[in-house]
Image 1 (cartoon, rainbow, N blue to C red):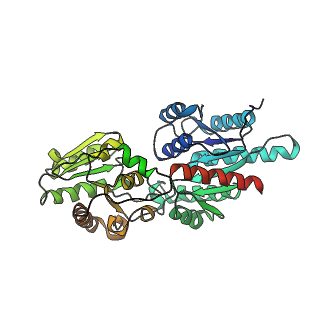
Image 2 (image 1 turned 90 degrees about the vertical axis):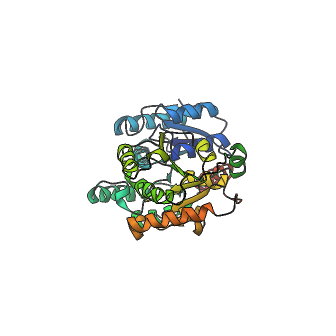
Image 3 (image 1 turned 30 degrees about the vertical axis):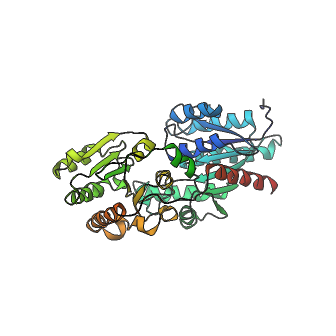
Length: 374
């Protein structure tokens, strides 16, 4: 039986329960609201569901996502469509994209013989396509297979959203996507700056907020910091995050003789970590539109980041360094050293104007309405 709602439902499908970039995207929309729609989020039990509950009961906990498997994910999404009769099913991340497309297409086919079958509009937001296939795929064969799947499901999707211009470009180049709309991740810059009190120190404090993974360029950062310490003896480095590279990175810091100046605190509150930092360094192989960089800009933090993906859409040229693929390990290490020194000598807080979370939600809701009018 369908649930009676005063507003049409937008059912978001998210395949990971942990709190990351997509979870931030969902909670920002839940906090501000989708004008003209009731937001519901199908997600497995975990940090994201708990946060959504705190914001107003938009979480639908269920066996959905990679840990649940395709069949269970398909069935629960299909059940929720039958129960909620949402105007829109909006998938986020590749696994949910594939499951949602399969469910909605199956309902389209069923409607051929059962005209009463309810079929929602199918939306997708792309958060994680990389220019280099090796970032997300272990082999060229796997990358090619996923490419064919994404090409097919985008042909069957009503509307696609990209979080940056770079993301749209990659969707078109790799998947042949058409009519993609760019809606940037939003950040409430004035509120972010107001809510975080900066802690100053006489010695520079460098910060990294990233998974401890090979594609995050942390080895280059540690080596650059070791060189920087020769000139700035009191400087410290905080590498916050969790991941498989921890032991190797700790060993590298020890080998370079800087263990006393490098901390690996694991998962931290990002706002708190930024409040005590002078420079945020992010040397990823690829980023679509980083919330870490958006928050750092909103806070007025000095930044050094690789010129990849959507980073140049957020940052100024003086905050960017070439990518590892472009100039190699040694040249990148030296470029990072020089850019950090330049940033430390830059004047203080600069104003940052960007799409707010509310404006982002308005644009998403407007996309839903336009699709309904077709």
